[in-house]
Image (cartoon, rainbow, N blue to C red; front, side, top):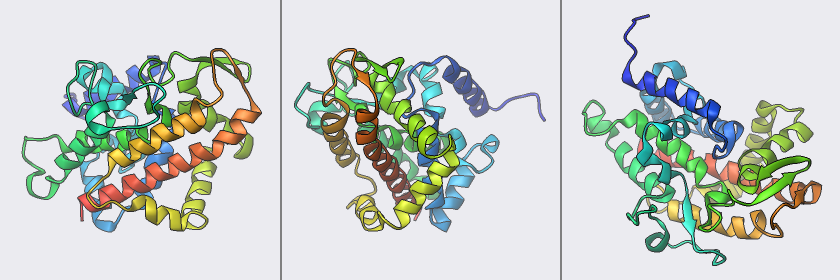
Length: 288
């Protein structure tokens, strides 16, 4: 191994270190891994080859191994922090691109929906400019893969005043959490502990089976998009799910137990599946 570490690998190491100290991760490790692994299994031959070419060598052709990269580089690429979420007006339960897709300084397009559109556009240059220096297409792939997960986590399209439920304190059974973290991580962890003997692989297998059988007709609808990708649609679904399921019935310091978990687990599983199907469909269209 050469002593000189390529720049991309340095960022990957920094990402891993940052993840060890970060307390709030969109979807958490399992959520993003589930989405990217399911998506990669649905790629066309052409798209799969392009993804493998763009992945850094340490990924060993496994997209899911790099799907948390974008979280870690928030501490290196400070400008990317606002690209993971959308703040919408409290209680309206709607998303409008012009009104809501902006950062705290009011710069338009700087939200997760805008980021998905941007990195999709960059990746469309793959066939003709993969070796040019205009864009880092490896980073574009990793940002897109991560942000497609983020936009499907309902509380990443949440209310402005509580920062997507990051200021709503709850008890997840006996453990103190914030509501945002419950949707990032706790529901998925509890799902896997209770129904899959703590196996993420078994959870992935069950989701894949549903996508190809029970949800097969719905999956075709999830894929549908008149253009390469449709992040504004995904964001609109997100805030509706946040209002109908995540925020509903929750005030400060409630105990969220079986009633909440069992009525919300299906929503989380559907959003994981939608994210995977749509990420694969977007990459298939990009690299067609």
